[in-house]
Length: 223
Image 1: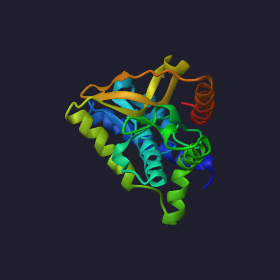
Image 2: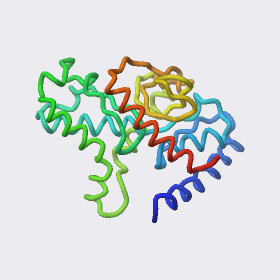
Image 3: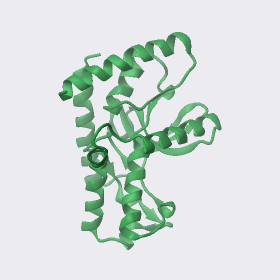
Image 4: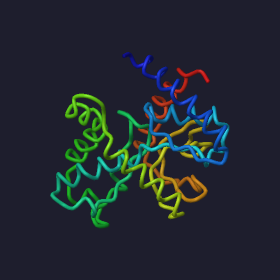
């Protein structure tokens, strides 16, 4: 199946599911997991006409978990000690932010040389493909399921966790009218706040590249 055929198939799944949700659960929140993630969340948002805080996507938690896991393996340190952040679209253009990554509060650069950090970032970007290669058929489901459970718990229990998710941007990070991976505060109100962080020029350039990749897929949908 080509990329365009896959995109069309997933759009044909998202649209009727969204329409049913609006019809029977008009006060629901829509948590989208289907790939291509950011484009599918955008589709659900446009079809549902729900407010932006009630439509969001799971991706950044999964990508961040892989980033943390690869760092944990490299350092032989508990993954529980590692805090990390991955921004951008869910795919090869995602942007793991090493500057905001720490081990027990200590910057990652204290433990690893830049070339090793770059290698882990690249492995994180290709992490989905690595899983598919091992599974032979299908794709990841354990980690995405855990990520969804964490998001749902944060909403139901109003934990207001800061989590990287695909959220609708209206000027944040210089991006408009697009779903994109950013840190958000997730609580009973859904996306209650988009957390804006300072980025270097290099990080901003990477974000722009990721934005372009996501927007290219969204434009193919022609909503």
